[in-house]
Length: 129
Length: 499
Image (tube, rainbow over all chains, first blue to last red; front, side):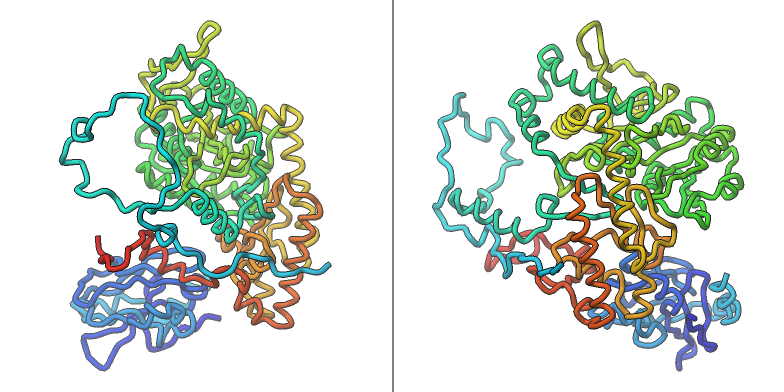
């Protein structure tokens, strides 16, 4: 059963959003369910620091043995950090999607967009369908 | 039965550029038989290089040795079984090559007047007729250069047909979720909208899902038959009737035609358009960057839209028919990849009517044998397919941690090409094999023993499998990065890598 931590927000496209110690900054990655559906991740293409995205813009792509998928930006904002470790070891997305396998850190343009994310329960019922 | 690792040539091979020494040559050029003129008289100066390209300077025998060595590091169908599912990697008979190299074919210039190439046009005409007969269609274009281009041609035919009837609003193409990725890609490229249809629990297109999706926005249905699971779409007559009633067209991706030739015809199933992969079903060489061919055949109501020119019979001779006002136009320079057509024609004529049927029967029989021997260790979620089967490695992965990808890599050590893996998407840990009619029982047994041996290794010593391949010239490569940071150009020492 895929893990759906209680302290995260989710999208229907299987990204998660984690609040950080900084009020307007969030960490974004893909969920445990997403990584298990994709299978072995072989490449993650991420944006560069300073890029800015609207909500649901494609911010990168993820390539697994099965398929290549787009990554959608859960909220609008500017990229303040990317996880360079994925360049050398994309399998971190598989082994630790909510930790070492994080993807980008965003400065939210409109923190109220956080309210549009799915709560853990809602995401859980989405993936159980 | 003992299985020994396959002897690939080991170590790295220097590139042909590294074998180069200034001044070495391989051939003596003969004196030209036409007057020579300075290059700038023929090509404007601005298009000429300032300095000649640094081509490798190597004597002939070094060139031969170089490429022979590389071929020993490669796997190919002339070496052993190549069970890549949905690719029909059959033997390419050498007689095909012999005929394609006849100087009357190989030396043809595409601008040769029609009256002087009646033999070549006759071959194209007859090949079109043979394909039309095999598929139960009415007319054919040999122009498309590959399966994917055949698909695009087919979808453009669909578009032209609906436009001609004032139904340009039909913009949706229905595609089952088991389909090959080129189907939705083609539809998107042609400017249509993809609507995905669910397969049912038997791995067939769900007729209920089809009914729900059909309306006056639907341009057609793309359906491979047998489908990518190797399963025959047994409701095909009902499916095509429903699609036709809704005003749509039926398109068959001919990827799996090898299961049907001489036994059942797409035209009789209600298809309006079908493309052929000559490199699959009709034994022309596969890819590798070389030329291919993906002819498209249609029923008569789509014939006016076929790419032009077509080859037509005209009072005992053959002509190129350019008088086709409704044609979608050219899809290839000149008339397609003619050399490939010669090979496919040779193959069909060598087999003849009964041979074409035996081909499909043997392909299905070989796969039934392979499936029966493997299904205990590698379950078949959708049962045995016709000419190919999709096994699942889920159970093996759960028990041992060994994934289908690892099994595929380990097969290389046993001297086989890997099967198709992780496709179709609806089978988890999919491992899809297609033996084709070519292989002997002994070769199939060797392959089965290899897979069973790998399954045993996974139980006893999974690391042998997860760390495979062990005896290939290179081990696991960073395929993700290789595809994105492609660098295939030789950089001379001291030369900057940019530019």
